[in-house]
Image 1 (cartoon, rainbow, N blue to C red):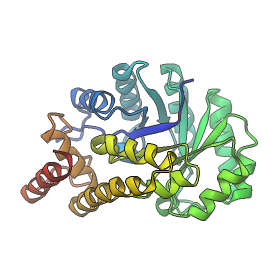
Image 2 (image 1 turned 45 degrees about the vertical axis):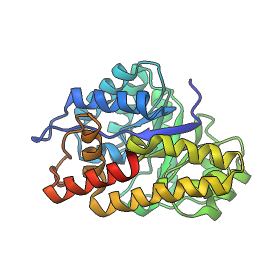
Image 3 (image 1 turned 90 degrees about the horizontal axis):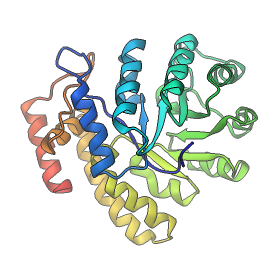
Image 4 (image 1 turned 120 degrees about the vertical axis):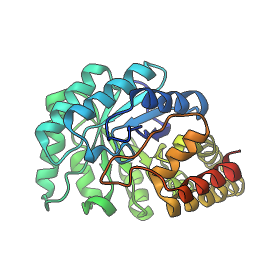
Length: 293
């Protein structure tokens, strides 16, 4: 298993206008992240990949293409989580057979699952696949909050390496790192990387890293080195970019910026708006020119 610390892009996926996977475009996004953004790894099949609108077969196809293009150049994490445990296991087995370094799974959502049910979900995926696991905690979308003691219960499974922490609760983040220093923690909010890394985050997984990966590494390394004034300057520019991207439509804008950089990033998957308006395209161009050259 490769080193899983550092900067990981939450991989965007290129779709054709009819919603089918654009394989060539996806390969270009993978290459852009590795060759231009210089990321340490790719987080495949997450929210940024529009994963929860896809069929099992489509999710497998994305795992296959990303692995085939990346080979062993960077670490690969496969997000296989689903409300359907059988699908999560099937995807986990497939990604493991492909040679992914680790699995990740979002906490089961929509239904109000008990913690015992959540623990069973993770233990089952691990037992069925034999792979390592990263818990994907994103409470503002799932409604699932896990406390320090509950993380301790999850971590009793030696295959669980840590958590992708997409939350603004830095008190909980600090408590987790203090209680479980041997478990890894990845920051999930690109706009709040400095406090996460200052409190001990081992890496970061972000959607904007597809276009802003070089700055993400600067923030990460400057903060680790204690150069906080310099880190704040880079974070400020990054957050200006993020603010513009969010106001213009997150995934559509990232894809439009990639297109301006020569990457066939395609469309979004419906029911998201699949195609950017002229106004959104113009704003993406402005953001690219102002912040990314």
